Image 1 (cartoon, rainbow, N blue to C red):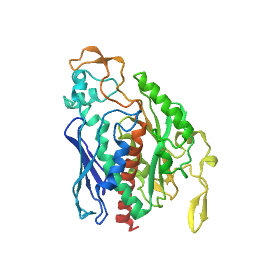
Image 2 (cartoon, rainbow, N blue to C red):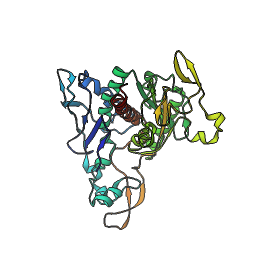
Image 3 (tube, one colour):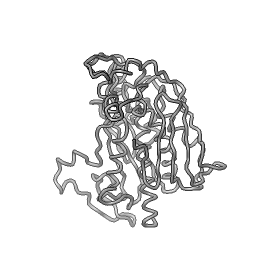
Image 4 (cartoon, rainbow, N blue to C red):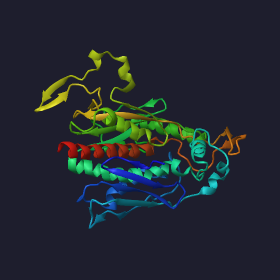
Length: 360
């Protein structure tokens, strides 16, 4: 099972949803970076369950501990171990799922691959695995901000058919955090919250889109051909639980335009090469061009719903299953810090690779 992501800045996540805890090992973090738990905890607080009425009520403080890799508040350049204890595991809520596969969940495919599975909350297939990603992403965001001046943020762009109006060039983190759904469009946020509450009351779930933004990324980051910057972003986003789609810049909408309509014309501005438009989403030929990088990630409705559905048992017999336990009616509010984390991990890795190869 592949649990490691990145090249020069590498992370390995570990732990299960209802085990003793979850965490991550970061390898390749530059030395002398000021780092304490206080730098990491805010992003984990944004990801944790139980933070509002529209997410799972599981109560976890998600308090992070740095186990290795720092001395007197600074990174050593050695592996950084981060650990978060599981405090509110209730595996008994999943007892019926021990022998039945949840529709559209990873229960069956894990069983088909390995011949056994951790049915207590889904084990590694649970979104609790992302605790390690978000913790590592907080470190990556700090490096990007302090050493490269890059800002990374994300927000809920759409819940089902409710679409927000947001300018990725101007949106601020304070606007994203101004409401529990993490949508900077206040009017759309209210409609989104009401929709999610209706889904929760009906025992159902709903999906949508998170938009990610990276500003002030210098030109030159990324690689041609196989390790294109947008390709690595796509892989990062599609590795997140419940993600089903990725597009960048004009995305699929660009297929409707002519070349004369889609091209981003170049002009000199302030001694720098700039584009008059940004339909490329800040990346051309797999390499950043200095404009804002922006993209969208589609998330499906949560698979576990409180309705009886057809399924199959481990004995390969037809049966039914009704969801139980504590689950998000919509993953989007908690997916925002996850998207930020994976964006930061990709960018910091490419920043270090660019510096190693080109000295920039």
